Amino acid sequence: MGRHKQPEIRDRILDACVDHALAHGLPGRLEPLAAAAAVSPRMLIYHFGTRDALLRETLVRARQRQREFFGGLVAPRPDEPYLTTLRHAWREMTGPAGRPYLSMFGRLRENTESHLWPDFRREATTDWLHPLEAGMRTIGRPELGTLVLAVIRGLIMDLEATGDAARADQAFDDFLATL
Image (cartoon, rainbow, N blue to C red; front, side, top):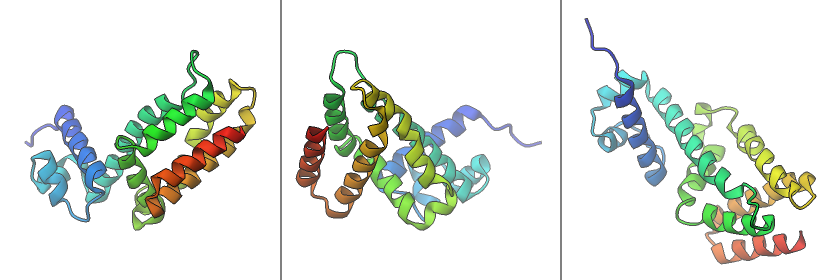
């Protein structure tokens, strides 16, 4: 009779895999994730079934973390004008705390890992519309949520491609000034 899987161990392993993937990207092999979780590759398979299942769950957990973090940043605050909230959110999203998420999910949009989450591009767009529309509603312009999202996504792609944070930051500030 085999051992019963322990969800708390699986959860700890998954968190360690997410931490590693955010810091280094999704690896091509199980060994880096096993080392990060302080388990054997065999234990990863035991808990997750396959390499792709582990990578998929790693992406899902990382996305949950990103939604919580970024969602809190773009949420309207009663004591702050929403454009100020967006300015602060941009700085945090593109700063050291947010960059690992941008890098991981930017690669997912572009690379072969898309088979791990086939509908990611659509979800990565639509899941931010509601909070941005809610924020823009505070200034009477909820319909601009799509425009704000498009500018943020475009500038993030620019930042990832060029690394020119000063230019992207200035462009975002200029965009906010037009609102």
